[in-house]
Amino acid sequence: MASVQVYQPFHRGMPKLGEYFKQVWRRRSFIAEFSRSALRAQNFGSLFGQLWLIINPLLLALVYFLLIMVIGGNADGRRFAHLTAGLFLFYLVTNSLTMGAKSITSGGKLILNSAFPRFVLPLSATVVSLFKFIPTLVVLGVITTLLASPLSPALLLIPVVLILALLLSLAFALLFATLNVYFRDTKNFLPYLTRAWLYLSPVLYESSSLKPALTPLKYLNPLSPFIDSWSGIFVDGIAPSLTAWALMFAWSIGLFLLASYLFLSREREFALRI
Image 1 (cartoon, rainbow, N blue to C red):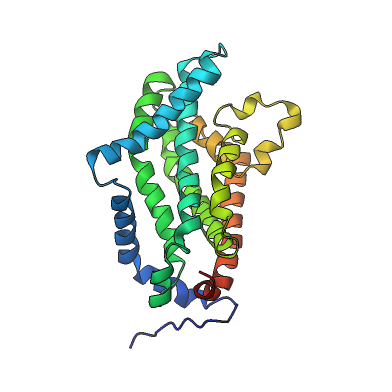
Image 2 (image 1 turned 90 degrees about the vertical axis):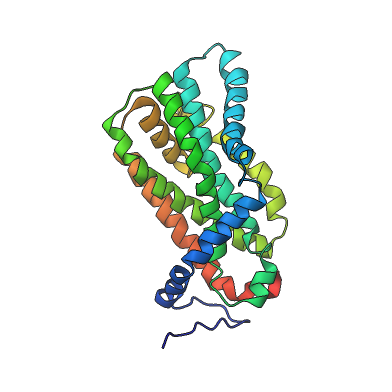
C-alpha cells in the first residue's frame, strides 16, 4: 500500500527528502501538463506565439547591436552572434526567475485545496522557461554558423552547460518564490533587477573587455561563467576553462541547495500567507 504524505500547517522544518522527491517524481505528468497549460495561456500554442519566442529576443539583440555596436563603430558578425547567444541564455534564467516568483502566490487556490509538494510549482515554471528556450537554439545555431565559428567538438558540451543553467534557473525560481510569499512587492521589483542584471552580465560586452577594476564581476555575477561558456562554445568553438566549470558547478549547485532549503523549510507556511 502506497504511503501518503501529510502536509501539516503551522510547522517549520525540512520534510523527509526521499519521500518528498518521490512525491515530486510521481507528479511528473502533472508538471508536464501544467507547463503546457501555462504556455497555452500565454498564447504559445499558436504558430505566431511560437515565433514570438524567437522574434522577441532577436529584435532585442538587433536593437542593442545597433545602439551599442554599430553606432559605437565596433560592429561585426561575431559580436552579434555573442550578443544573441548571451541574450537567449539570459532569458532562459530570468524567465524561470520571473515565473517562479509568482508560482506560489498565483497558485493559491491549488495550494489551499490540494495536498502536493509545492516544489512542483517553481519546477513547472522552469520547465515552461525551457520550452520557451528550445526554439531559440535553432536560430542561434544558424546565426553562429553563418557569422561566427564553424562546427567544433566543443558543441558536445552544450547539454552539460544547459543542465547547469537549468539548475541555476530552478534555484532562482525557488528562491524568489519563497521571497514573494513573505514580501509581496518582490515581483514588482523584478523588472528593475533583471534589467540591471542584464547590463552587469557579459551579454552587451565580453568579459575579456572588462577593466581590471571590474574583473570581480566575473566571479560575483552567477550568470557570468554561464554566458561566457555558452558564447565561447557557440561563437568561438572553444570549451569552457576549468575556472568556468568550477564557477558554474559552484553557483548552480550551491544556490540550488540554499534555495531548496529555504523553500522546503517554509513550504508548510505558504497556505497561511498567500
